[in-house]
Length: 343
Image 1 (cartoon, rainbow, N blue to C red):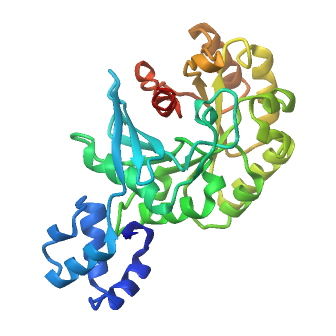
Image 2 (image 1 turned 90 degrees about the vertical axis):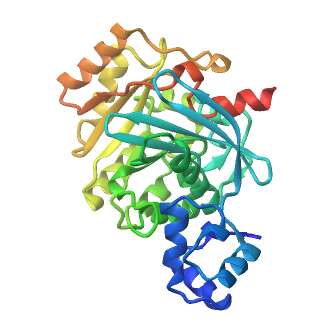
C-alpha cells in the first residue's frame, strides 16, 4: 500500500481519475487528512462509498506509531515514533505564549557527526520520505491538547538540506492553504551549512526562515565541532549567506550553542562579532547547551551567558537568548532515540 501523503494535490487529482473518482474530491481528502486529522477513509463521510473503499485498498494515511513519550514540567512534550520499518525518529511540541511549535526530524540518524549533538551518536540510517515527515506533524497536530500548531522547525534529528527534495516537497504541503496552511515565515529550516543546498534554496521563491548552525567563531574550532566545516569553511559559508540574503531579502539566524570551557568566553564573542559584522540581515540566537553526558557537554553559568550576549549587543549584533525547553526530559535532538536504542 502507498502512503497517500506522498501525493501532492495535483498528483492526488490524477490518481482519483484512475480510481474512477472525480478529481475535485482531492480537496475533500486533503481537508479530511490535514485539517480534520482523519486517518480512516471509511470516516470521510462526504466521499462516495465506492471511492472510500478504493482509497482504503490503495492507500494508508498514518505510517507511524508512538513508541515513547516524555513530558516536561514546562509543557514541552517529546515524542518517539516507530515508522513502518521500525526505525525510530523524534519530534517535539514546544508551547509558548500564543504559539505552538512542532520541531520535527528529517532523517533517521545523522551523517554529519557534530560533536555536541546526540543525533549522530547512533549513526545515519536513511532519509525520511515526504509522507514520513508529514506523519510527524499530523501526529503533533492531533495529539497535543488544547493547542493549535502554529510554527514548524526542521531542527530535529538529521540535516534537512541533505534530504532536500523530501523536505521541500513536505514544506509545500505544510504551507498549502489546502493542507496545514502554515505560513512560510512560520517554517524554519536549520542547516549545518551545506552551501550548494543553501544556494538552491535561495531560488525557491519561498519566504521560509533559514537558520545556520554556527556554534564557533573560527574555522579551527568549528571544524572540531562540525566536520562539515572542512568541506564548507566559514569564509565560503558567510559569503553564501550574504548572497542568500541579497536574493531573498530574508534575515538569517545563526544558532550558537554556548558550551562551558569551549566557545563561551569573551575572546570567542569578539571573533563572532568580526565574523558577522558585515552581514546586513543577520541575527545570532544564543543557546545554552543542553547537557549531553555521553559528549561531556555542559552549559556555561548564567553570568558567562549574559556577558557573551552583552558583548555582541554592544557591538551592534542583533542577538537573542533562547530559553531552553524540556531539559528535564532530555529534549535535545537524538537524546530520546539514543536512550531507547541503548536499552
